[in-house]
Length: 228
Image 1 (cartoon, rainbow, N blue to C red):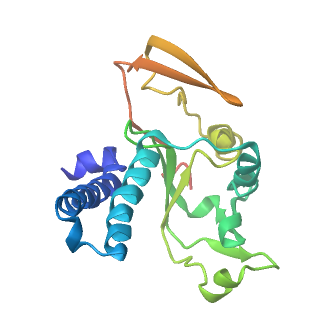
Image 2 (cartoon, one colour):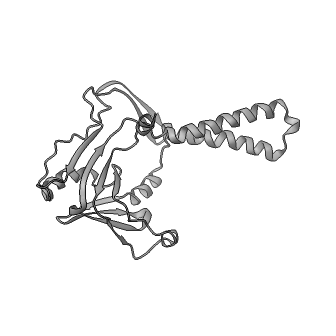
Image 3 (spheres, helix red, strand yellow):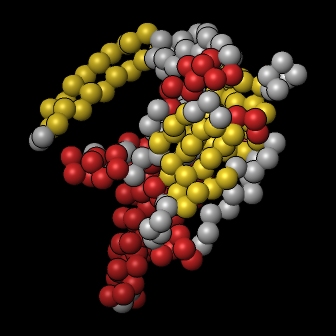
């Protein structure tokens, strides 16, 4: 069960929301059947119990279309990873700072791409804590709740800028060669494709048969005596 949840992390949110939605529908049923017993605030509560979980479930399963302005704002808040001979930097606008991870403290890097995940990601296993460099200007919440840097496991998702440059940089700075293929393993054979034209954009719906030779995890780097 745990492995199934790990491969389908949306269920962690969808299942509780589904329970709230069913509860809301049940309350709505009794409210319609016995309306004289339901005050105004009761109707508001029941409607919220139905609408909010339904909207959230729709968002988790199908997602929401972002306007061009929202997309630009989202782009400005993307994480960025940059590389040098000594270290990598992970710039995180949401915490107003940058993680500095020296190559020497990285013991292992694993690439994950499970079918139930929205994003592929790297997990860095460290033998020491990374350094955190704060921006000069800090949002008041980030000043109030400092970032915890005492961690030896760091996850980086593929919505991060320069994410796919990591194998090349491993080769350049650590002389580590990897034959990783970033092609989506869920897209083996295209079964059907449909384009729906909506106001301002085109939505493309594709159905794929997954590749038979699927590897959801791949070790990109593992420290040894030769890497030290």
